[in-house]
Length: 258
Image (tube, rainbow, N blue to C red):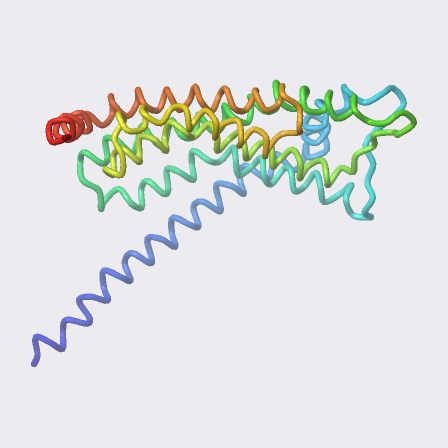
């Protein structure tokens, strides 16, 4: 009986320790984002002016963006500064996540997780940069160009921020394709050979995604579909390199295939 009485306490102690560790990691994440936010909020207006450049360069002379809500001129730049702070603090956030889950991972998993976390961060940044410098100018050139004669394109600053953030997220997550492929192969859900056999479906799917997340012009769709497909091929190469055991699985499957 005494042995059974002590079991709940022994089980509660590790749980409490994990919860305390989780609280500490979350607090560190909040402090990290806050430290990045404080200097950025001082330059919130300059940040928004920089973000608006792809559209402003395409607007006809004498036109500008507008604010249709009373508080938009104040809150919209602040919102942008907070989002930029979170993106800038992403390495710190991922490090805290890694520090929390690392004790429960095997050595082989630790060797894989670190490269994946670093590469996923860099790929997300690359997707945002690709969208800002290449995609947005193309999208806004199309939008301004198709405006009917006599219609002045004057976008609301809050709506513009929401639109640009949607584009950034679409390209940021699309650029995570190689990481997703490596994880799928690592978990044994699929093999690189099976993924390679479905290239034509991936290519069609990439253009479907491009049609959903970009305006209805061919150039914008291609600018999303082509990188996604190329990153898919890169993911296949990375999966074969980082998950060598997948080759053994492929050999076993090909040996048992009828």
